[in-house]
Length: 153
Image 1 (cartoon, one colour):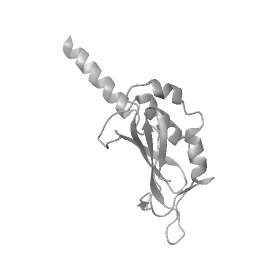
Image 2 (spheres, rainbow, N blue to C red):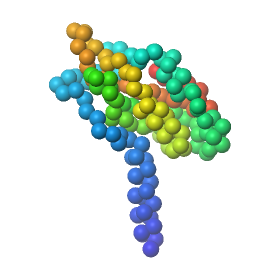
Image 3 (cartoon, rainbow, N blue to C red):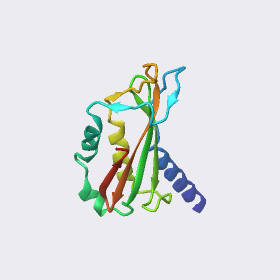
Image 4 (cartoon, one colour):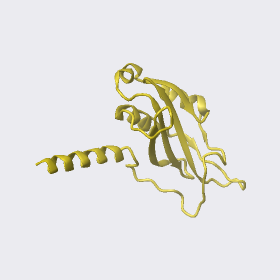
């Protein structure tokens, strides 16, 4: 009986952790290189200010302050294809000392879902003016449930 309970707990926890990863069908544009997040420049309609407001609007700080394990850095990594569509989301978490940890699932799900909701990406272009696939990330620094910083700026 104990083995069954342990097996159930293991399956539930791994399913929950990996459920935050990519669940939608996504594909990069074929035969195109995938560039890093820093070059060429990936832009968003309305620029970083719109993105910052997107995450801060309706941010449930009162709920997040009450939760345990609500300080750290949540990084959402993803790709943007040559059509401006996003996918291949990955969630990474660490404490404020950069040691790997798992923050409260409600908090990480908030940032993952808000990142997935960003739909106005302007695809990056290479040196020849051709659209390309790109990597992108956002890191959210939290202190006791309060959103302190969003990177990169």
